[in-house]
Amino acid sequence: MIIQTYLSPAAGKRLIAKGLAAREDVQTALKEHTILIIKGSTNAALAEELLKFCGYDEKVRGFYRGIFKPADAEAKYTVDKYDLIIRKGEIIRDKTVFDIADELGPDDIAFKGANAVNPLTHQAAVLIGNPTGGTMVPLTKAVIGRRLKLIHPVGLEKRNRNDFHMMEQLCNESSTAGVRMMVSPGTAYTEADAFRELFGIKAILAGAGGVAGYEGGCFFLLQGEEEALEQCRALLAEITAEPPFAL
View 1 (cartoon, helix red, strand yellow):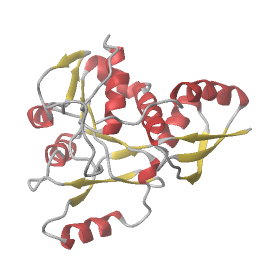
View 2 (cartoon, helix red, strand yellow; view 1 turned 90 degrees about the horizontal axis):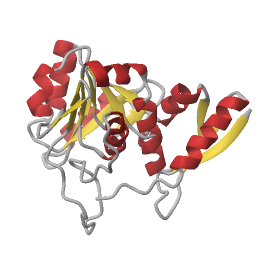
View 3 (cartoon, one colour; view 1 turned 30 degrees about the horizontal axis):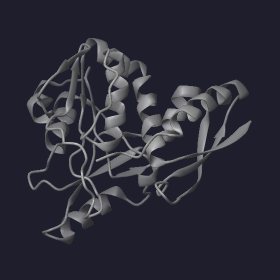
View 4 (cartoon, one colour; view 1 turned 120 degrees about the vertical axis):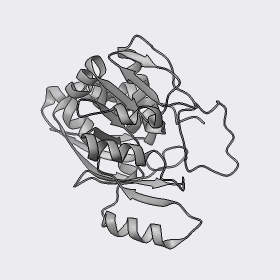
């Protein structure tokens, strides 16, 4: 059986967040180890979903670092200074990745957004504005040195099937004033992964685009058993009205 659905970028972020929050490894790390959520627009939705498991039902605002936005866009909320760290179900306040990265190991999980994703290989790449390498430097040290699990929640509006290392090289050679790019040692997690893990259904990206806040949205064909698709419909009805990310 096949059904169709369209997800705005905001709805896609919420779906990704719900898919990750339901994973067994994430639930285990949430209760028994450490979870690090780096500030970002998709990670704001993930932070909300994980905070619910810790007894906090609240909106996460101002949870971002460098973002692309119109020059005249005004921020309504104060930008949060800190990342979200949850250790054994308890929130660690007033710390960032730079404070905690050296303590993270193979039982812990870090989440960071991405700017490009190859949906076939789950490879992710991150644009970096900080001349010292930003948050990817401590994360990469922890991934390579201590086998930290790094996951990139990223919507398929950022899909890219070019050679990532080629893009990285060209970006880093292109200008002394522009951003840098880094191919991540982590793994991407998209809407398609959430559909598969939550409901056991296959999501085929069949189109994209829109206007009035739907720019970058994705049109999916969802294939699976009738019962699974009905369960999926219930969640889609819940997330379809997800408001755009607010500055």
